[in-house]
Length: 442
Image (cartoon, rainbow, N blue to C red):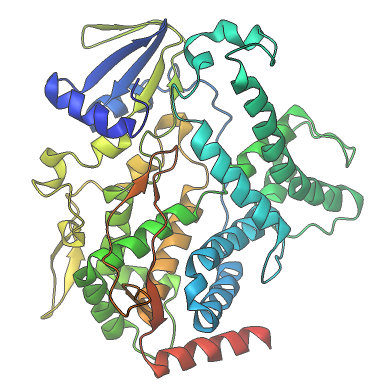
């Protein structure tokens, strides 16, 4: 098992061995890696009844436009006041949206404890959950040894990490249940709606049924939205032509007198293409969600043993040159577009396989918060492009810091820390942001 950037190695092996299906036997554990869209959908979609180990169920989604708009105004005002803290503000923005949507909670403008706890949990889990990261993945018997035993450091780490996750996702969820059960004051949110639909809830406000535990854990998976936004900022920094063309479309459609809204999405095909390209070029979850097959299976003459771990190589699938062209490894939004009406008009190419149906998982393990993630990401991208320029930072000697594409190997495909400058495109744009923020506070 490769120790880092497994998705790149898997793609290289697929070419070397001329096979989109790879089998790795790591100390007795079978890993099946799927490197093409057809294989992934054949097994994980069409045979999802046996390829969905650890699935917890499909849950309802909700609208959140008003909550998002208020956080966007706060975010943009913060960028005006302290643009050098853009990375911290991005994490705060996405955390605020998720806490509002998942639990109906309102966060502090700065240093909110719920957001800080969520960020700590994400940083831990993205390092811990890569397939084959620990020997216990390949030697399950190790789970029975005591934590002090040589080689069992994973048990001590797991206990610590589980405590971090529990401390992050339990308190806000219990606030929702307590408010619902005791006095009916819980605000409309994902957790409340799911709790209201349960067949066997626990009537005690401080206790959870098995069904409620599933809802709690599913709500907790929403804390991972800022990674895609960091990739967008890095792409705009490294590919200024894409930033410029997106801003030209926004200037034509939106102008300088208002901010983009969800209703503008169909009128902004280039911005939509930017979103698609961010999800395709450096997808957030490069190995998707591992599936466990529940029974022996046969596919294209291959025997797939029961309990094999099946990994979709999402990164490789989204860089398939047969689908996305010979420049699949480059960032180019126009791959999604066809010339439309008008001199600069574009329209989305309906024959291009859009990436969000791949990057959010397959079959019964598809991300239940995908619609929320897509909507919030689109509005984040359009809002930033509309009002701000993203340019290289300047060092202490006055020289531009050359941007570079560099990522960290983890469960989430996160950009390595980088510097940039984010400033309003004009005083008119800055004034618009301030007016929008003032109206939100009235």
